[in-house]
Image (cartoon, rainbow, N blue to C red; front, side, top):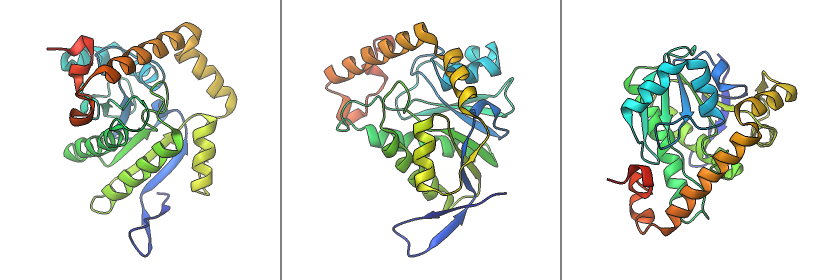
Length: 239
């Protein structure tokens, strides 16, 4: 295994951990569990969600529909079906509004709850995307800091091989600034073709429109701060 040296500011030493940042397509990761940046509703979104569903097969959507709506910051698990991974952990990241609506707490919750599920299923390895940095607009530098912090905290008390999988040029560049050794298994041509395949001009517009609608509903909700936008903030999930 490769080990990444992560320096934790609240400790006066560097701690070697089984944690790697890699540039890859998360659907190609051969791990016990992959984390999916899921839509709060039981539908197939764009980006990571689209790619995972495409490789896993239609059974994954059926399993997801049985679960129903997922709250922001929560996580659930299904089998991996056609993926190389045994499990898919579906987590719903925060939609970035302005940083004052619990976004950081929700993103931290995504990592903590996903890792707790993986530990519960005795997973030895897990791969995360950089959650909520696509259509949900979470700033990548801050998202990367939160991911590293939560993963590092988990590894202080638990053993698991954890990968943070970055895809686009910006996330890869940020990772290289923080960590000198980031393995890349894909190139720019792969990224361009994959992005067009999973988003496409029409799908990109639809995904952004949906994100905008959810963001507007969240702004109007008086439950955002205290409940970290529970699913009641979504029209489709109102009880």
